[in-house]
Length: 567
Image 1 (cartoon, rainbow, N blue to C red):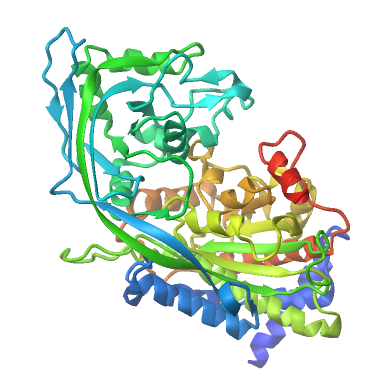
Image 2 (image 1 turned 30 degrees about the vertical axis):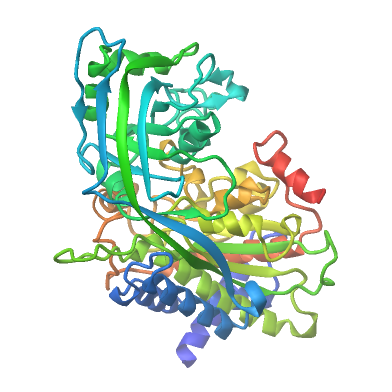
């Protein structure tokens, strides 16, 4: 213990002496609290949360409930005050789980009256050719509707792009391509970077808003940034929906294989490659297809509750004073994909990296903030520090969506959200990706602080994957809260870029959303500790800042922030 304490104090002193800016430097108490962050503690939490006992941490099932209770207990041990419902750490959310019955669900493409080729169509195989779920939350639904190809399925007025222009899709089924229209111009659909228009969630949402009853997203690995196995594993298990969501919903939300799409277009008498190319060019017009989708979707319907876990260190500002609190919020999702009953061999999606790592990190971060709070004496923290482990991220960021709509303090009083999601424990990073921070007024301070932690900020190494729109910070940004995730780059101590790139590639191809995302004894959590020290330093600056953090002028989330401040 003496050796450990001495090392921590030496580490604190070294950070203080290497700080490069007055704003990046924090009081000795902060640096001492940061130095207390122990990689071994993170390891312990990750190992427990990814144990088979947790059964893949699926929302509303035993394993998910156990994980939530474990995290709440750790929050209590750290001294966080409950910030959930009725004086608890749990913010209970009403969900409905929908799982298509593979042996009863059918889908076929049939000839329409305008099909001069006389093709009688073909049946699709569930899981191999397509996956489907029913967001309308009914046990069964039958569809017999014409298909319309709407290109990329995007309505983006800022880019003068509307794939639905001049076409009525009410009562029909749309067919669209995953991703954005191709662009090399960062000012047009983000260039190589994916925008929200390219996300599958947007395409289903927009199709429903336009009155369609169904949607078929054409999967292409290069555009989606993941293979069909990820689509299959993520969509043949139960899908979760907010029970009380009043937005319009499809009756059939489906993905189809690329080869299946080619067969569909051939049945319609069209060349897929020609239509695919046309869809990526300005002026594209939606194409009614002379074929029908006939589908019977039978689902198991499971109403349930699953909680976000929320705790708070209240700030010293007077409670209830609108605009007085400027809280820092830390988030990570604790849910994963559960398990496959009756399957031989390893049937549990343990989700060790995704996202037991993020949960272990915010639990240890809460303990460090507790140390800091206790060291500050009666003055306490100037503003609140909030922690939330959210549920149902894998189901479309639903837990964080609910948190954003029902925050423990008013939205306008949350200055910043820092999120941790799937931080591979492979060593000490010399680079960090804070994609989204550059969209805020806080970014210059993030840059300065990164330098003091020997971290070079690098852009998202896979912008085409649209990472900003795929984790829980996005839900917070949608309600106006400046938000971003802290992730590793591809340079680590003792290794070159190629080493890390190989590690990430291997994980993505073999372990991501697979049964092999298991805890590994050789994992090195020093980098995870470094990134939460970095996040703690940023959080201290946030709650001591004399000026509010804003979205950059013209950013897509600026209007939501302004609106929240008027409430």
